[in-house]
Amino acid sequence: MKHNHAWKATEVAGISSALLKWYDTQRRCLPWRGDSTPYLVRVNERDTDYCAPNVVTPYGTWVSEIMCQQTRVDTVVAYYTKWMDTFPTVQSLAAADPDQVNAVWAGLGYYRRARMLHQGAQFVMDKFNGNMPHDIETLKTIPGIGPYTAGAIASVAFNQAEPLVDGNVIRVISRLRAIGGDPNHKPLIKFCWWGRLFSLLNRLSAHPVALGRFRESGKRLIDPSRPGDFNQALMELGATVCSIQTPACATCPVQSFCHAYAQFKEDGSTSPNNAPLQVECAVCDLTRLEEWGVDAPAAVTKFPLKTRKKAPRSEVISVAVVYRQPGDTMESRQYLMAKRSDRGLLAGQWEFLTSKATHDSDNVSDYAMRRTWANDGIATALSIRPETLEGLIVRRCDRGELVHVFSHVKHHMGVEEVEVDWPGVTKQLESPMVRWMSCQDMAEVGITTGMKKVLNLVVKADSKARAVTRHAASSRHVKPKVVDNETRPITAFFQFAAKSATE
Image (cartoon, rainbow, N blue to C red):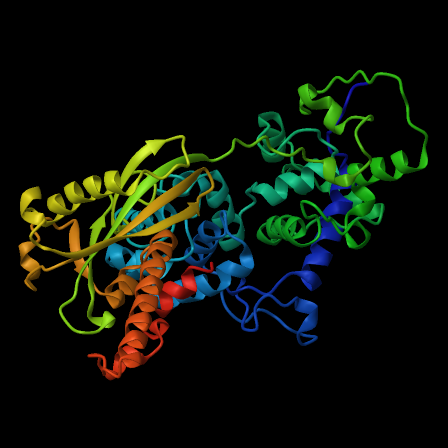
């Protein structure tokens, strides 16, 4: 059997008409689409004559597309509005301090995205005088903008007939054409970019005879002024209807054109065919035929195939939470923070003193070994000799282990708490990559979720220890030496850390 995934002109016209009609009433209201609050409701849930009141900008489209990479839309909305309130224009973002950019992004993860947005804005100011270019090739010269983001900006913000392909689009097209391959299968990706119905729509729109034939057959071709809406409709369909595990086929506007759905209905109504299947196809992954062929379970969800992912590797990290205590309250604490290099994981982020112990293991090193590593790191950060450090340590203790998981790596962190008697003169820290920070300072520069978990672990342990001390003192009828603020819940001082630990 030879597969033919090519689009028929009649299919293209029908799909475009049905998809845009559905999008006009069922799309979610989002700030980067020019909508007003409330967000995430569907258009048909608002006023009958609702129309997005705000202009869709190239910069807003750019920010939204970067944020929506690896992050759910319902999570992005709050971060997007905060970002646009802080950096409403390319000019304001380009002029911002990197720490300010990280602080606004903090909690969204994948911090390289924020750094590339910042660098991209500076590039636009330097090369294009703050004006976003219109054509896709020039857009791709901006740091952090690849084919997908360039296609989004060109089509959505500038109404140019350019395709864009993300995971949602790959899933929709894989099912529409019943293509057996996972989202990383190169022939499938190529088909989505170059064999797409959108490309055929563009070609047809240039031929009046073809257009006339569609009109005669009662088919309505896509409005040539709406390429951005067509792209967004494909993505919206994948995000809200044609989902990964539970597609709502019964309400899908293009169900009648879906080959995967047709196969599902056919397979469910016919008896199994035990004859081996011989397939010729330049797009499907024939090495995984048993997963999507006739012998595979009848289901729309077998398209596309699941990506074969590698398990995240493990890294053991030693974390030293070093602080000085200028005042009597925990609120007065200042923590020793180091800035990561501008390359690699969490580039440019502020963190507690860390050292990587080993690779490909999930066993945290024993405390004695971690103390030795911590001593070297603390001495280096404070620009003192290791033997001098011992005289500065007020107390230290092991605070146990934490696990923080990224998409490709799992950090097993052994956490130590170290209080030092360090003079209150910040200038004694010689390196600009090291700073004393209060919790308020951390909130302003935006530390990562992993470091917030570490801070929360230490704060909770200290809070518990202080409560025990107060109880012991009161049981001896001795008034503890604490100030009024000390009796407040510890989360009053470290609210942002406690909140982030649950993210």
